[in-house]
Length: 261
Image (tube, rainbow, N blue to C red; front, side, top):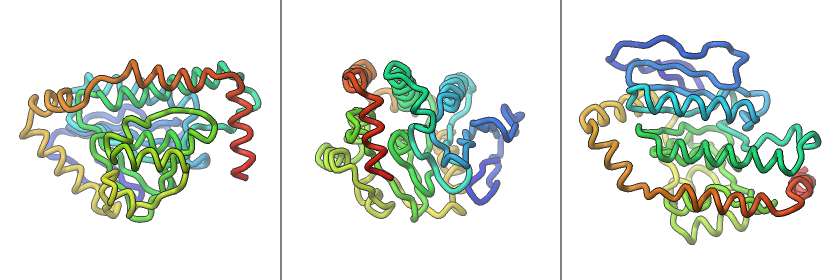
């Protein structure tokens, strides 16, 4: 079964496989149903912000999905929001080095999703902010009409996901979004080509349609993905590390957060 924010619906015609993770205390819930693996960010009290534990769980889950034989990996958030981005709740206990390492792991996660040998689908609702908006840059991107996006990383000197955003919406639009750090609503995101709008009640049907297309496309779909997505992992990581390694990362984040409150 595949769940939207409102509940579960949409079993595939293939045999359902056992749930891989079911504890409601887990930061990530994982379920495979036939050709579909569903990852659910499960920190609704934190707007599904990317804690260190959640990022590590996602990295493991994406790696396993790549070798599972599944055709589609879906990603969504539990509760009111898709993902609030980097979890700064323990900022005072973090050093610059700790923060740098966590950003590197997030970039590795984004790269793993970007190059995964199966189709990836982000199902967004509520807010998708910062690294959470970067997390939405999957092969297919569906957003509820009330979704809000924002990418404020440049406000504290972090270059994360900009090239992948530019590949979707164009260099000029990506530059404006990142430099201004402004919020943009789902309707604008659709006009830019960043997402397609659909009510959550229709998401199971969308999932079934993608799986059917993948079944028809077979191995050619995987090869097509590899050909249309150039491997820029080294340069993307270098850009992130170069920005995050500048002295004073923690102070820059603290100053950014003070202007947000």
